[in-house]
Image 1 (spheres, one colour):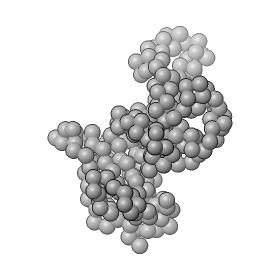
Image 2 (cartoon, rainbow, N blue to C red):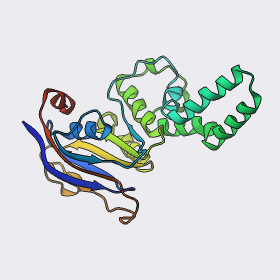
Image 3 (cartoon, rainbow, N blue to C red):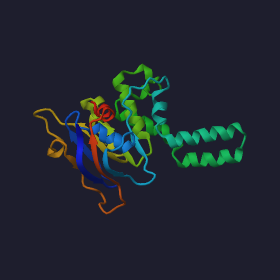
Image 4 (cartoon, one colour):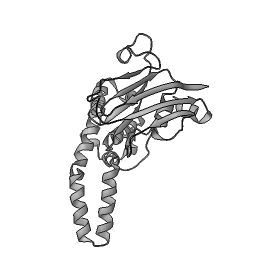
Length: 239
């Protein structure tokens, strides 16, 4: 069963795109294609070289580490720097350690906790709770921690699969604002129920795009694809 046929779209740097459609039409499959987890049955996907992609894990995390440390761990480049600092320290290589500490400061390592705390605050965590183990929170709050961890990642492209599912009405706007303030994003969401307004009047399977800040800027993502409902693709598309 075809999921996507004769689809062609380009996304330029700085654009934020919403993919709107009914459940099971292939939205999650399209994101899996961009992440490299699936291949197209036909066509091509053209991504810029060295593109860094961040996305929200859909599994509820079961970590016992403090929630703020879990979010900080989303900055994988910073975590790699910290590991190299620890290795240099264990070898008593003071010169290497000093060099890496300078890189760590330049990368925002000393402000990482405040950045993570700000994301958690925007997603509904009380300031007094951010040092509590992640396992002590409800499943909904742990999924919000996943969103904060993805937003913490330094990335060129941010993929959000129904990111407001775990945001209540009082916090949804603040969480969305955090996403808008980050790198460009592709937001995937189902069609609204009868009587609700969609994204700028979007129709089923329509890609709604905000105007590019610089339409003549560097090339972004371009893909022409055909996807069929194979067992693998259907599993990825399940809602």
